[in-house]
Amino acid sequence: MHWLVLILSGALEAVWATALAASDGFRRPRPTALFALALVLSMVGLAWAMTALPAGTAYAVWVGIGAVGTVLLAVARGEERLGAARAALLVVLVACVAGLKAVA
Image: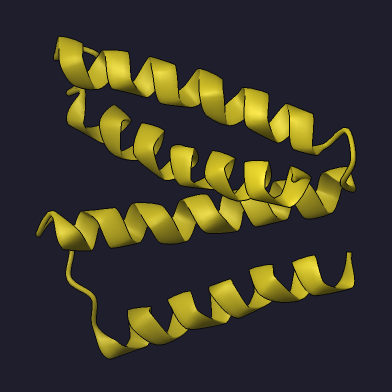
């Protein structure tokens, strides 16, 4: 259960990072509200997951999921391009996150 909450919290990290960029320096109310909500939920989930998982591993998995998710959201929104090198590096990042989970 802790791993599932950690994965969802990592996904929420991608949401709040994307909303933060869309908030235009907190000048746009809807993205700002989404940022605040996703940030709080993401942090609460990370904190709860850390009650049963090693802090370093939990944090690394959370950041990795958030980083990959943020890039994929930007690609889906047409804000960034996903070339072969970037795609390969994201695959390596996902492999590292999965490896951390496997050995924890």
